[in-house]
Amino acid sequence: MPHWAPLRGDDPEVHALVEALREMLDRCGRSLRELATLMPYGRSTISDRLNGQTRPDWEFVVDLCKACHNPDRQGVDRHLAYLRDLWKAADPVRERSATEHEDGGAEGGDGRLVRVLHEAINELQQRMTAEDDEPAASAPGRPAAGILGPAPQRNAHFAGRTDLLAELRRRFSAPSTQVLYGMVGVGKTQLAAEYAYRYRSLYRMIWWVPAEDPGWLRATLAALAPHVGLQQASSLLIEDAFRAVLTELDAGPRPGRRLLIFDDAGSPASISPLIPRAHADVLITSRDPAWRTDVADALLVGTFSRRESTAFLRELAGPEFGTADAQRLAEAVGDLPLALQEMAAFRDRTGVGVDDLIRNLSACPSRVLSESDPIGGHLPLTADWSLSAIWLEASCPDALDLLRFCATAGTGRLSWSDLTAAGEGAGEKTSALLSDWYRLVRAVQELGRAGLAQVDPASQTIRVHPLIAALVMDEHSS
Image (cartoon, rainbow, N blue to C red; front, side, top):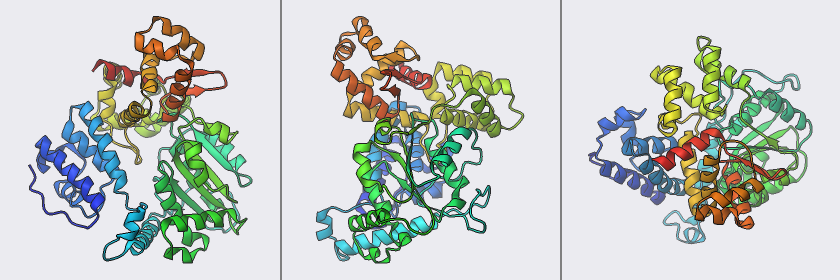
């Protein structure tokens, strides 16, 4: 087992996370040499990321957890759920409680918050991107905007989505708020990023805001203060700077266009009050279909068409990857973009043939997909599904029961009346759920919010993607 050096730094939340990671390593009994063979990191890199000075990135935490628990998939899922909370608490741009304001130590509560805000601004400025390819038609001579904030790198293999990109461009002919919503793995974030990169020469400023957590959203918007002319906001606490930025954005038109992208937003009820209905282009991505009622003309991002899947796979794997093989692999993963990218990466890394890949994917989808590395800063599909399932287990167990029932019922669309009728032949627990209309409606809503099913309230139907159904069934049989 590793011999750990004393923790560096002075952040108790980071120390709590790192101590949990060190304890996990001690329990699994793997040496740093062994870990280096199981992870895409050298021994010195692993040691440096566990020194307590800064928070390790989430991709590293996932890789480390997989290396420690391999091949115990349930152990990975269980530990990731615990580590996720510690990782979020160790966010370097987080709000402090009122107690911390009062008991901020030698530096003082206000002083620490000001320093955190300055560090956030500096970090986000350093992450500005300045790619020069594919400029959009815009005012002659106008320089392309950099993208401020933790935006993903541009996907060099982006393919398809031509109609959706064109529709977004048309809708943003005047300042407005647009929403991209859809289930897990369909590429909402990639689509938003491609729009930003492709049309960045239209904008004076583009700001990428992670919107899953309201606290992170506030802090990221607070760091926007100097870029909207609020230099004095650097002396404010995060909440005050955030409010000042909202006021400025809502004040009226300013020279040059601005684009604000709120990625992975939760429900409209929890996030909408924090998003400026500004004199700017606002683009929101979310799994929650409730955005259709909050923003009436929200755009559904579905799976690829088979033609898009084929083009995407051949773009990833090269022209030597035949069309017939690409079509068969696309069918095997139900044209889900994230799964296509993961399978292409797995095939490229291992050299496994398409026949073997499809056969093993059908026999044990969780194991095959769990071998895929995180792509573009995202969790692998299996980890994303597992964390969503853990969240549902805690917040709405009925939704998880409904998901399991729908997975066994097939991958076609099921109307709510179909579900009610099917309850007569189900087990006692499921039958009680399907016969109680109010419980059923809430379970359907929560499945939609989690992005694990396609829910259409207008037609009162629900559909579970074949690959999600396969992962659910695989979990049930393991």
